[in-house]
Length: 93
Image 1 (cartoon, rainbow, N blue to C red):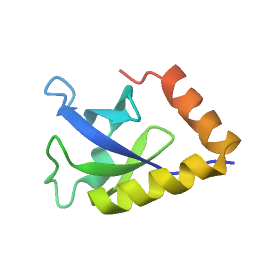
Image 2 (image 1 turned 45 degrees about the horizontal axis):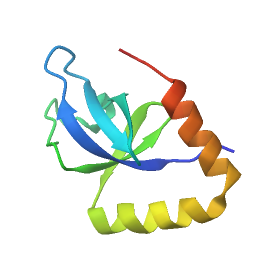
Image 3 (image 1 turned 180 degrees about the horizontal axis):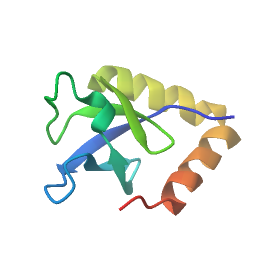
C-alpha cells in the first residue's frame, strides 16, 4: 500500500532548486518540490506543509489537515510504519 504523507518544509535547498528538506515525524529527507511550481513560480516557505508520495511533493496542505492526516495515518499501523521506513531509507540528493 502506498500513502501520501504530510511533511513540514524545514528548508529550501538553494543548491538544488527543486528540492526541499522536509521533516516527517522527525525523519528528515530531501523531497522533490518541482511539481508544486505554477507557471514557473514556487510559493513555498519553511514551515509550510506538503503532501509527499514516493519522494515528490504533490500538493501543499495546511497544518490542521497535516495534523488530522498524521493522526489517521498513525492509526493505520503497519502501512504507515512501512512508508516511514521507506522514507528514512531514501536519499534523492
